[in-house]
Amino acid sequence: MTHWLKLNRLQRKVLLVILAMVVVPMLAAGVGAAGWVSSYFEHRLAQWITEASRVDQIWLKAYQNDALMLGDALARDPQFVTLVEHGQPAVVRPPLRHIAEELGITLLQIYTPGHRLLYSSLPVRETPSWAPGQRQAVLKVRYHGQNLLAAVGIVPITGPAGTPRRYLVLGSLVNRDFIQELAQLTGLTTRLYYRAGSHYFDLFSRPGHLLPLRNLSRMAWRRLDHDKKSYYDVRAETGRYRGLYVPIVDSEGRVEAIMFSGLERRGFDEFVTNRAVLFLAISLGGLIIGGAAGLLLSRLVVRPVEHLRNAVMQLAAQDYRAAVPIHSNDELGDLAKAFNAMAVRLREVRDEERRLFQKNKLAALGELSAALAHEIRNPIGVISTASALLEKSPTPHKRSELLRMIREESLRVSGLVQDFLQLSRHRQPSFADLDPASPLNGALATALADREDIRVTKEFRHGHARIRADGPLLQQAWGNLLRNALEAMGKHGQLWLESEVEDGHVRLAIEDSGPGIAAEVMPRLFEPFFTTKAQGTGLGLSIAHTLVEANGGTLTAAMPKRSGARFVMSFPLCPEGRAT
Ligand code: ADP
Image 1: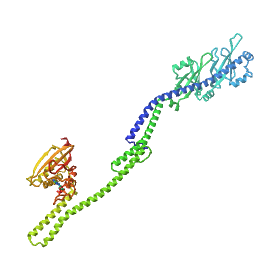
Image 2: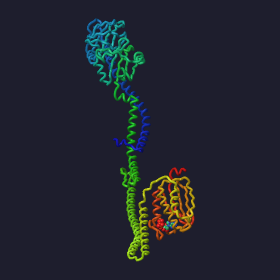
Image 3: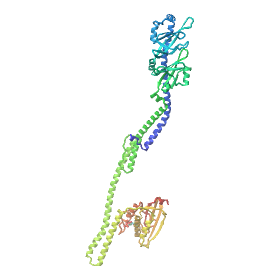
Image 4: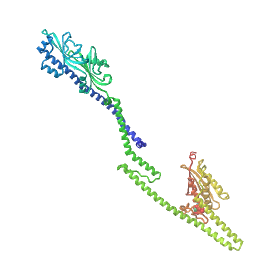
């Protein structure tokens, strides 16, 4: 996992772009979708609760309607009416009795117009509270010590003058089971608040307690009690439910009960109807999708690029083992293949170069050894012959002549060896800031110490420019050039010393009035042991060349302005020197 999260710069950029591309539209969509989904869902919930609660109302109404229907039938039965009028026990004869049993109408009561109970089929006690002319009611009754409700129909039995002489109250007892039955039928929590005076109470929710209907706004009361219309509340019953209050209106237009059908608020409903939560969920989803897409893209595209970058850097550091893994058959795969082929070719070229270098090195070593052996062989030959002659030499003059020869030739060999050593192994330069002309001036002073016949013309135009170099090593290089110049000029020569600054470099030139360098000599000038002089070692220029390069400069033979030989040294300026 951490492997995935370790992103390089390119991967981070890709991820950010993808996130920006996904998150911004996702946030906008989140706001819209959250609003739409929650209001749509809330609307559907309200619709469903309204539909389902209608079933509750119909059931309750059905009891009352059935009771009324039966009551009307009984009120039209002359035999029943006669019995009732004479205060006889109200015998309901078949088939009406069967119909009553089928409809679940168990309560039959007969009242006088003054609300005096004459007869009751069940031992219920109640306070009759219906108004004259009222046809339906939900009454609170006491039955076997229990508080119950009765959904009843009220039918007057009128006398000959048309005035009510008796009241028939027929109906069913509504108990806790009835309410639970309704709840099971609709899947909603059902509560029935019956009316007592100006208040409404729930009899069944908590057995033994009368729960008043509370927490309704003034507007809700107005709608229920005054307008007699149902009222939907998303936070009903102290916020536990979303539900519908329906007024049960009697035939006189009086609200006799309020039926509540509600759905408990919880879980998923709350989630989808809460805009903030929904918005967060959609946005989070967008973030996760965007992040995953970004990571995937970075893995598919950026990873191969990263491999390629690493391999290129490896190659730049001259590690020719660099290779890019080929994971795909697309353009990136082609690029990886091409890179690998190039790395292989470079490796081959490098190996070839090494072989060639080794070969050339050995050849050069052979040449150098041959040249050195050749140079040493002559003086050694002279020394060996002279020493042999020395033994037999009769005269002191001859002996001293031979000894001089031996000394001279040994000095020659010793000089040769010293020069040779200098060519191959001069001391490590120790750099310092210096005036580029000072090593030349130092070498000139030494070279011309006993040469009054040489004229020197100086044209130094480098101002205060300075270089970083090892003064004594450069002085030695200038010394070799000056020695060659003096040897070439012979007596009464002239030297021109010049300097100038150009392109961040200082160039110092020395030109003599000698015969100059022949065109055929030019290409071999800096070759070790190349000399045109009888007593030359051919190492002077090679050593000078090596010393100048060790100081970060270059030494070249240049086209002379006059007729002699011209050599130029060039050095990069110190940054401070460049500024002045
Ligand atoms: P050496 O002086 O021992 O011959 P160098 O390496 O110093 O060895 O010089 C190589 C050759 O370059 C010389 O033999 C000479 O032919 C030529 N040369 C160098 N400097 C000059 C010069 N100033 N004028 C003419 N020829 C020169």
